[in-house]
Image 1: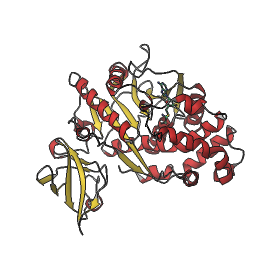
Image 2: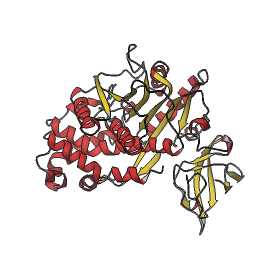
Image 3: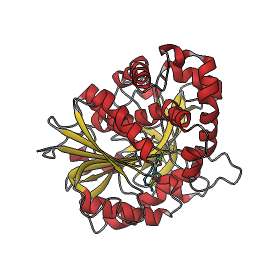
Image 4: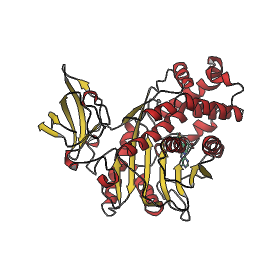
Length: 416
Ligand SMILES: C[S@@+](CC[C@H](N)C(=O)[O-])C[C@H]1O[C@@H](n2cnc3c(N)ncnc32)[C@H](O)[C@@H]1O
């Protein structure tokens, strides 16, 4: 998925400066040089990042279905460094992923029509250190995405110290433009995610949270649907960001399938992206397949060093996402950069590979599912500015596409 240069720029050195000043203020760092210090990172951060990666990437041979939280916050003698390590290692990427999802919505022409008076209300579920809330607020600071006027972010999180850390971090940058409210609370994901007395929200986000539950996607769908039905404002959005690992990603695809069944009786709900329709998921057809996106960025400089020290590679950020709108408007009314017929619109769901001097091959997903396709690359910038034909990437959208050949071997003749 493509990302605006201005967003990439802000998540590089400027983000590092914000992180550094916050951590110095909160006495997590003793000198501004700590973030550049191999010695400091190796002693205080690297062991925790390795333990957390082991857990999040399900590196155990049996790939457990869920994350045992006791193992990542409490199961350590140095909770302070564990928190610091989660924050330094995982917050920036998760914040960027959330912002990248908003970036695509903006590029596709999404604008808020919901009256936000008196206050625009947002919530992050399983907020941890408020990564996704921070990413969205940063996106808003750069691009004025959310409506003008008072805005509030509710942060819901089971672990109280993490929640307070997250609130402080969020406020250290966005205190002037957003108010925050914190709710230390364990969500039962198969039931409504908010208490009955909770208000409605214009914007909801859940990032790297749902996969921590062992429940089946059908019970996630029960809880999420109830939450949307009772607490998502008309013309509001729900954004889900989850890992790109096969098992977790497939669970999101199954969640989508379950939600679509419920949406049949509730046409006010629709999945906006990444799927550009309510078609049966092409990736779910084969047990070994899954669907994910990837965003590229320039990591904050300290994160490049940390990646080197931990042998992690966060040059690009994979994710599985889902954006749901509550709106009676059609998808093309909500995302006006989408045009032409729904049946002639496809998204690249793989990278494109050269298969000849000028030909590239990739997988497309459209109304009839997923298919392999080839394109004779020509250099052209399309009218929507969405793709450059010579440089097709995972996530690009082809509109008014003319295809030839059969489903097993398709040729893209033209698109715009
Ligand atoms: C991997 S972290 C993600 C945090 C943050 N959203 C992000 O994107 O970086 C998952 C967080 O969800 C919290 N969490 C997991 N299950 C929860 C539940 N049932 N209710 C509330 N919080 C939960 C964990 O304590 C943890 O802080």
